[in-house]
Image (cartoon, rainbow, N blue to C red; front, top):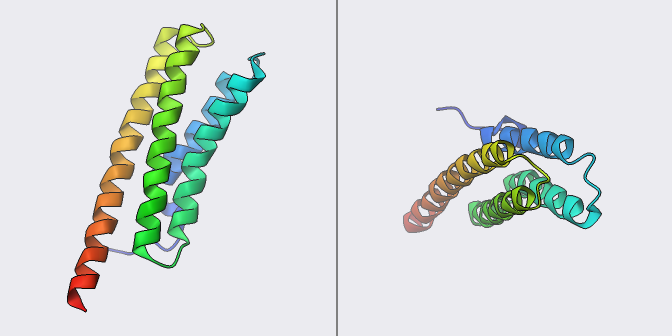
Length: 126
């Protein structure tokens, strides 16, 4: 198994980046600027927390930032319900975004768990 040297190589970061692009595209004409700003901030926060955590010095820090990215994913998923309820997106579009965010939440959680276990093993070896 090879080590990942750059956050850009993480599949979860790549998916978060795609979600940013698609979210911006989906709400480009939304006149509810407060809503648009919040949903854009939440998806940007996902990819930024993944990258920031990756560049931190410890696995504990990385795990913490992955948890924040997971929380931002849940916020974006919740916002997609609002987008559907306010008819900013068609139900099928909102559902597609929520499904992808759910998958990202699971993937981020799995990586955070793996990173946390590695940190525990390292501490136990001391």
